[in-house]
Structures are given as structure tokens and as C-alpha cells.
Image (cartoon, rainbow over the protein chains, first blue to last red):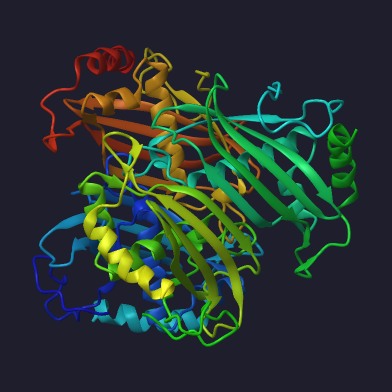
Length: 158
Length: 158
Length: 158
Length: 158
């Protein structure tokens, strides 16, 4: 599901490999509101699904993280709605981790039409690793996670 | 907020006091779907909210139950949609515990217009008390809960 | 995505073809509640998604139906929760139209583990075709829909 | 429901009247996720509810706006999560329109504990008035809305 980025939104460096993760969604009736378009809060769920599936593609099972006592709550989220998505439309949620600052992970997103000609939504989400038992921010990420994410971040730090 | 029950679903005994709990709701944009009416799954959240608030009115805090290791998962739910509710409409969710069979609690619901002239939805929900740690059905309800519910069920077992 | 039914839940007639439609889902964080399992209302969205995708597999685009003025509201829904689904678990929503009585469509569902050894949820949902403009039940289904569904229902009426 | 602002977040001008609208919420089971706290997307629904109810308090029925062909989609949203809200906790969503730039309405929010000692969430949301039929941004707000909002904005432009 890692597709080539071929349009306007170029990687920041021409050297940088293409590290977007693509997650397909479709606007089902329960995603819509009275206006016949996707309700603006629905996108938050899609961003989360894309993030979880991207981590899974790196070998990080979110439920395993939770099981070992590490949670990754969202601490900051901003989202811009460029165009609405109608009932029945299929779209691609493109996600990538844009920065890793200690235990803070920054993600960015673009939700686009299948042909990449339309951008519906752009978003940024920041997460912080928290020790569930202590209820405190962790000093460092769990080792397995750190390794997997370093491989990922190596892609854009190169 | 305890009003007279005047329709089909009569109290089981004419002696029984009126034990419906009324919980007001309003159809907000996020509750609706493309058809401009409340999405059919939204009602499940409203039934839950009415149940939790009814228990609270009896002195049972749901979060306290969870904290002492007792969960009350829904095991059975049926719902009939008589009329749709439009964006902006206010309605009353009427809830009552209709039976208590050991650790199984049966609830019934009517969602009505404010003037009680329209019934939008009728529903039945069954819950079972579960020991969260063991993941097993409890042999009996926690004592504080049992006492509070007996007072409630006394109303209809009269 | 039409898989063979190999276990306990047999087609009603040994002559009947296998007409279950399989729709995969995964329990994402936003599907769960405080208990770490899928919230009981989440399943309503999954049933809807499976139904819409089953219709699509027959050539019926739900958004096209809506566009020609036909809506398919749920009029009756019952659901039994056999086992909970934990965060991160993948499951299969199996859906099929079990009866077509005029403009009323009855569906049945089983939500199962990937290996079919566990049944998490069983459900029945009834829909009725409604003329959106008039707000009334239609006398008959739109022709294209009728044809597609007859092919489907031929499978179990055979 | 208009309470005094007594803490850190002061009105911008000491002359400015207190124009926060307070909307109470409670963390119900369906609002929570596996971590036992309110799922981060739930807040989007609460922000919307508070906004709709604030408009209602000014005499603007959101469903009336929609009926006359004016929609108010969210075009920009940012939200910061300071502290989590646990199952069963009651909180106050404080909302106010902070600016009106033509047909663009900017809102700001604080979600606080009942005693105002804790701030759980801060957020900004921008809406734009859209002609539903044309699918285009309106040149100006519907007159009744403009009047009501001017009274409101007079409060902070004073």
C-alpha cells in the first residue's frame, strides 16, 4: 500500500525516499451528516486508523504497546478542510511521521481523491508516549518501538 | 421528570408506581446522516446515556462500578424505528429497568416527542454483570448495586 | 470476498448456494470503550458498512439509490453479543439478505473470528425502501435494484 | 448558563463583557476508549454541540439555517489536549465567537472542570457560510443571522 508520490506534494528533499503510507477509506452512510457529506469529526477516526495501520506496517502493533503499558495519546491536532467528501466516495488517507522529538511523534496527513487530483483534507497530529500506570510522559520510547520508528525516521532524516 | 405512562407499554401491575426515567436529547448535526435525520446507530448511544443517568439517579455511579471491577456489558439489544427524528429536534428518552433476573438486567425504552404524541423508537436492552478481572459473569451483583436496584425493582414488582 | 461457509452455520438448504458476503473489520482505538473492547454501538456501523458493500458487489451503489430519491432506512434491528472483540483484533462481518418482502429487505449477520471458530455477534436488520421526497414507503423497489436483488434472492429461494 | 470567567484566561479587554457560553457535558461510556478516558475525537462532537447551543441561545436555530439553504461547514480546526477526562467526569465546554470576518466565523473553546481549576482542552474552530444549492461560499450571512451575531460580536468588539 506504499504508493509513489507523483504530484504536487513532493518529499521535502529530493534525496528523501517516499515515506507516505496510504490508507483507503470510503464515505459510508454513518460517516455523513445532514449535508450528505462526511461529517467533519469523522476524519479524526480516519487519521487514527491510518496511523495505526502505518505503525502495523512497521511491525508495531498498537494493542501490544497498550499491553506493555505504553499509551500514545494525541496531544495536538489541527485539520484543514479543503473540499467535502460525498456519500459513497472513496478516498486515500496519506499519513507519515514527519518528526520524532524524544517521545513526541509528529504526523502529517493528506486525504486525497483516488486520482490524487483533489485534496480534501490536510492535517497534523502530535502524540506523546505515556506510561499508563504512572500516568506520566515516558522518558523514552519502548525499545522495539524506537527501533522501528528509527528505521522510518531514517527515511526522512537521510 | 417522571411522567405518566399512557400508552401501550403498561406497568405490569396497576399498583406499580410510575418508574420511567426521562432523559432529554437533541438531534445535533453529528447525530444525523445524509438523509437529514438521526442516524440509526446514534440511538444506541442515547439509550446508554439514559441508562447511566437513570442509575446515577439511584445513587449508582457507573464509573464506580467499573472501578470496583464490575462491568455491565450489553448482551442483547433490539430496537424498532417508528419515525425518524430530524436535525434540531428535541426528544425524550424514557428508560426503565423492567426485570432483574439474577445478574441480568433488562431495560426497556421509548423515545418520544416532547409532547408525548409521537413515538420515534422503542427498544429493549439486556445487560449482565461481569467480573472484569476474571472476565466471567458474576454470581451476584455488588451489594450496593443490589440494594439500589431492589428499591427500583420493588417499584414494579409491588 | 465471498468465502466458503465451512462450519456450523450451514446454508438452510443443501441446494442453496453460499450467499454470505464477507466484510473484514479491525477493532481500532476509536471503536473501543473504557473496557478495552469494541463498544456495543460500534457494531451498528459495521453492519451498515457490510450491507452497503454487499449491495455494491451486486452493482447497487447506495449513493446512486439516494440520488434517485430512494432511501433505505433501518426499521428494525436486533443484535446479540456473544463474545467481546478486543482492541487490535480483526474479524469478519458476514452479511446476507435473508428475505425480500415487497419493499422490505431482511438481512442477517454473523461477526466471526478470522478462523471462524468464534462468533462474536449475531444480528438481524430490516430495511424498507422509502421515497425520500414524499417521505413514504415505496410501492416497489426501483427496477435496477429489484433486478439485482432478485438475482441475489434467487440464490436462497432456489 | 453564562458564568463569570475568574481564572487565568481573561477577556481580552477589561472593558469587554464576559461572552463565554457554557455547555455542560459528561463522559459517558460511548465517549471513552480503551484507556478509560474520553477518546480524542469525541471532543469534536462536544465543540459542535456547544456551538449549536450557543447560536440557539442567540435565537439562531441551526436547522432553520440549513432549511433556508445556508450551511456552516467547519473549514479549520485545531485542538490541544492538556489533560484527559475520565469515564463519568462532568465538564464544561466554554465557547465563544472570537471573530467574524465576512462570512467566516472564528470560535474559541476551553473545556474545563466544573470548578474551573483544570483545563482539559483548548480549541479553535473556523466556519464559513456556504450556499447549499450552489455549493459556494456566500457573499454575506443571512440577515437574521447577521443581526444576531452582530449583537454577539458587539460584545467583544466594544
